[in-house]
Length: 392
Ligand SMILES: Cc1ncc(COP(=O)(O)O)c(C=O)c1O
Image 1 (cartoon, rainbow, N blue to C red):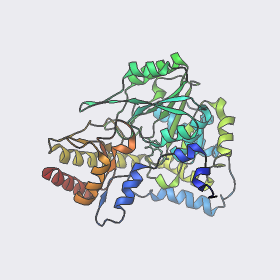
Image 2: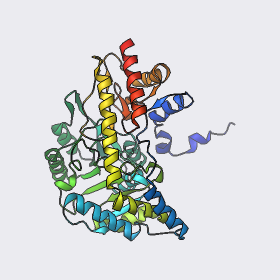
Image 3: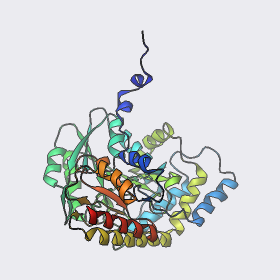
Image 4: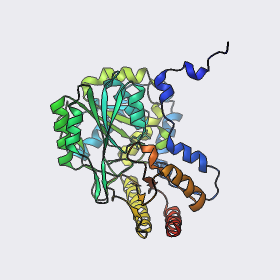
């Protein structure tokens, strides 16, 4: 008798968890020399020294022990301060919970609200990690395809309302500004979504990690602009993008304080907390990181303009101008499978892109370019793409 493969012995949800379509292309192009890599969702700047130094000092000072599950008090206070300043009203530190990156905030939020068979409405194309986390928790992802027009991606609120009325509907994920589409909801749209959620008793999972990356002004519209304290909204955020800290794995979940003990327990039983010396880096980022953030935003904007100019030379390319975030998500007339396209761009153009196939249904015809890179690289990628498109 042959013994079963160990693969058959793991739980069905973990077996079903999808492989990242971006990683597939990264693996495909990893060894290619001279490739300009615009495929991942991160900038190319290292973490600024003032942030790294704060963590190093805390490490040297012996911050090496188990720590608060909810996050160290001075970081929670700094997060409250940051929100108070940004939204011009008081926020209490007990709303903030420090997590291992934005992704862990997603996992804790999803575990807290999703039970077997619960439906979470996800407008798409979407960053695939959240749908995967929902399914790992036993939930069902209900994709709400967004409509693409070159004037912008739009969310159909009537369809949202219809899906929200389903008996097992539990939550709505709103990622604004969105990865990968750049869709950025205005205040009125957020208010309309909130009123649908209120009417049907649903949670909102507000992923606002790109909230500072907007073309003009300080920030994108947020559910904070339209919601009351104590509502069923869980905010996911991160240090990763604003302060070039992707590798730190430092983020936060914001939730009504009554959920504090539940969140503390979920942190305890998933990661048992975030290294306290890293959290000191987070404090430095929040307290002294404004000018670095402004510099990053400007740089990404410049990168976006260069790539847009190159793509616009071809009358076969269309894209919606992003309202926020640091991506472009174009489509090429006549090319339907961007998994194949991404490999061709590696081989024929020397540019690494993320295929839209990795962002779920509705994304297949698109590909994602990260604009938060240095100008030299962006210019090279822009020229190569324009050249390749000319020959197409
Ligand atoms: C939309 C969105 N939400 C959350 C995250 C998670 O960020 P982190 O890298 O801090 O886990 C990302 C990262 O790419 C993202 O694009």
